[in-house]
Image (tube, rainbow, N blue to C red; front, side, top):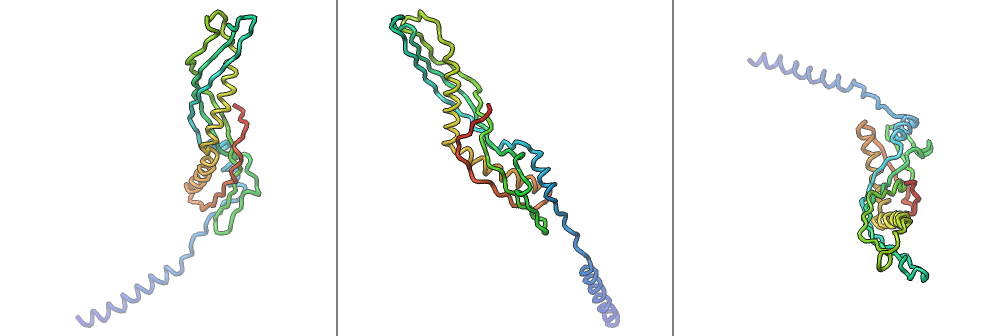
Length: 204
């Protein structure tokens, strides 16, 4: 029995030594590093990244004075409830090569473009009250609806700005891009741009 143990002990030590040697000889796989062009192409494919949307209600009051020659019966007062939304995000088409840096260790450094307001939408306008004069003898001046739309857009955008929509959109853009590269197991450092003044002039 003692002889068997004396034979097994060197064999065990030899096996452990062989296992250790094989592990030390393994060369770690080289990490794939994305090129700057690949990073820019992947990000720009997202186009306009809408990261934040606010739903906002606004009350609009209108008042139009009457004329003496109509005995002031053409005066008009209106009360409207407007349901709208504001969408903000990052236009990733503005990303430039100088905004992307890749390191040898695979980490990517991305400087995002500034966030902006993309859209101010008026989803619905409810007429609560609309009166012409005291007797209702004159027809409603329909130009009041254009006034309501203009005023509502301004109020809804102002409400979104007071609620820091651009700050939130900036934070969400950073999280979205970071998550995108995390799916590819690509280490990344995303730096958002400074939050601009919330006085954008959206197309819609």
